Length: 349
Ligand code: ACO
Image (cartoon, rainbow, N blue to C red; front, side):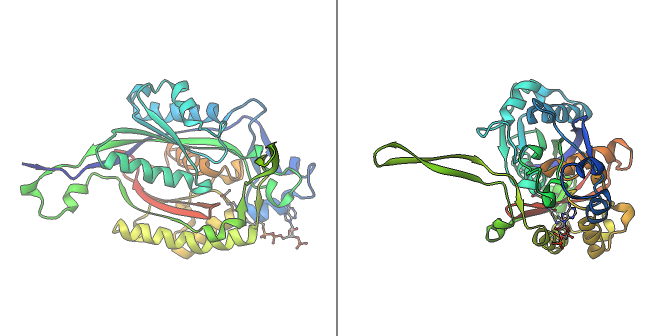
C-alpha cells in the first residue's frame, strides 16, 4: 500500500525581462543634487532600467513568464497557477489574470500577491504549498515591479535606488510517494523535494519606515454621507532604519531556513538576496560567513527592482552557467511591511 506524503517541488525554469531604457547615476545628477560617486559608494548601483510610458507591468511580466516556461520545457497550457508578486499592479483588481490571458495559460488560475521586496520569496513559499498538497503540478511565479511610477523623482534619498523589471520561475511537482514498507524515516519521502526549508516573517509595527500609501480626501455624496477619494502617494522611506532592519533580520531568517533544511552555511552554493544595496549584500554575507564569490549581485545594472530582483538575478546566473542543476541556493527578500523571508532550494529537477 502506498502512503501519500504529498509531492515535492522542483524549480525547473527561469526568465526575466527588463526595459531597454537605462538611467545612469550621471543622468540622475541632472535631476537631483547627487553624484555617481555618492550613489556608487553608498549603494553599488550604477544604472537602473525604466519602463517607458505605455510599457506595462503585464508586458514585462508576461515576457519573463514565457521565458521561464520555455526553459522548463512545458507549454503555457500546462500551467495550473500563476502568482504575480507585485506592489505596482497595472490594475488594483489584479494584474495576474491579464498575464494569464496574454500568455495563453488557458487553464491557470491567477492572482496577485503583495509583500513588497519580499514578494517573490512569499510567492515561492505560497506556490509550493499548492504543489505539496497535491492540488497543482505546474506553477508560474512572477516577481515584477514598475516602481518608477511611484518614485518621487525630486527626492534624492529614494529616487536613486529603484528600477523596473520582472523575473519568473516555473515550479513543478516531483513525486515523493514511497511505499510504507520503505518508510523507515520520513526523510526518504522528501528526498526529491528541492525546496529544502523556508521562513517568512512580518512586523507591521515598523510599517512606517517604508510606504507607498493611499491618501484621500473626503467627498460628500449627499448630506451626511461622505466617501474618501484619492490616490497613492510616492514612496517614503527611512533609509537608515530599513538598512538596520535588513542587516539584522536577513541573516537570522536565512539561518532559520537553513536549520529547517538541516543544512549548514558551508553547504550553500549561492546566496541570492533581494538586490537593494551592495552594502546590505556584503554585510549579510559577512555575518553569515559566506564568501563574496558565492554572492550573486547584479544591482549595479538594475538598481532595486523590488519583487523582481531575486528572479532576475537568479535567471542571469542560470543563463550565464554559474548556477548548475543541483546547486543549493539560499535566497532572501526583505522590505516594506516590514516583511522578510528566506528560502533554501536546489536548482533544477
Ligand atoms: N546624493 C547625495 N547625497 C545624498 C543622497 C544622494 N542621492 N541621498 C542622501 N544624501 C545625503 C543625505 O542628505 C545626508 O546628508 P546630511 O548628512 O547632510 O543630512 C547624507 O547623504 C547621508 O544620508 P543617509 O540617509 O544617512 O545615507 P545612508 O548612508 O544611510 O545611505 C541609503 C542611504 C543608500 C538609502 C541607505 O540607507 C540604504 O540603502 N538603506 C536601505 C534602503 C533599502 O534597501 N530600501 C529598499 C527596501 S526594499 C522595498 O521594500 C521597496
